[in-house]
Image 1 (tube, one colour):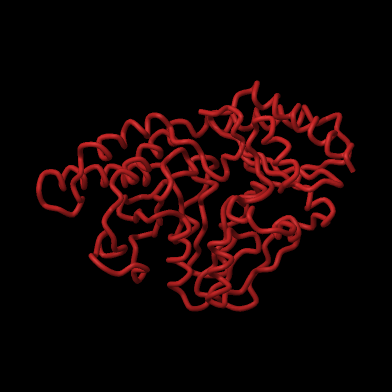
Image 2 (cartoon, one colour; image 1 turned 90 degrees about the vertical axis):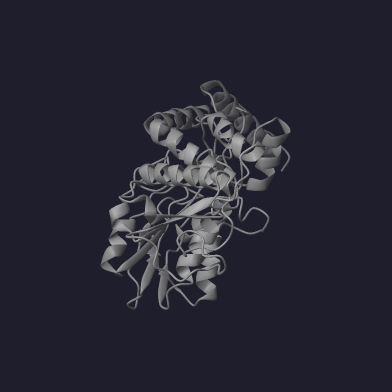
Length: 354
C-alpha cells in the first residue's frame, strides 16, 4: 500500500486479506449464485456469509436487512426515488443532492452545522451521517422527530465512527470506502426491504434488486467488513494520531484555518489557505508524491467553491483555498509528518509566486 496516499475518503486500497478471499471467485469458483448446482450453491453460501459480515459491522439485527447493490450511489437513488415527499440535508453527496433535485425534494436549511426542521411534513428525510468533504458528524437521530422514515448515507461512517442504526430506516454504504473492492455496496433496510425494485428483472436479492450477483465483489465486501469490525477502534486511534501530526507541522504557517464541525471524524481533515486555490495545492503535492484532494472526488472535476463550506459560513476567499486530507491504514506517522512538511513548503512556494 502507498503510505503517501492521503485521499482515503475518495477510495481506500483493497486490503490484502480481502484480495485473498476474492481470488477463488475470480479464478475457479465461477457459479451463478442463483444456480441450483453445487457451484451455484457455493457462490450463494459465500454471498450469505458476506451478508452476515456486513450486518455485523453495521449492527443490523437481521442479515436479511442488508441488500447488495453496486454502491451507495445506487442505494441512495433507490431510496429517494421510492418516496413522494422528501427532504434532504444541506450538505449531501451529489447522489442525494442531484437525485433530490430531480424528485423535487426540499433542501433543509441550516444554521452553521445545525440542520433546521423541514417546512412541511415529508414522507422521508435523508441526511448523511458523516460529511464527505469536512468529516463533520451530523445529528441524524434528530431527524426522527421530522419524519417517520429516515435515510442516511453512511458511506463515510461505516468502519470509522460509531452510529446508531436504530435511529434510521435506511442506510447506504460502499465497500471501497472501507478497504473493499469498487463497484459493490449495500442498502440497509430496517425490517427487510419493502421498496419497489429500482432494477427489474430476475428477482435476485429476494425480489428486491434484479441482476446477477457480483459474487467476487460481494465476497470482498464481506471480508472487508470483517476486517473493519475488528480494526475499528485501532483505525480510529491511528487516524486521530496522524491528524495531530499534520496539524502540528502547520503551526508555523500563516493565514490558514481548519474547517471542521463540533463533532468531527478524525479520518477527514479539511484545511483552507488564504490566497491560494485548492487545486493548485493538490498539484503541488502530487508533484512530490502525495495524493490529496481539493473536494469530494465526485465533485473535483467541476469548478467553483464548495457548497458545503459556503453553507457552513466559510468565506469565499477561504473556501477556494480548501484542501481535503483523508487518512487510512496505509499512512504512517512518518508519512503524515512528511505530508505536513510538503504542505508547508508547497504553501510557501505558491504564495511566493503570487
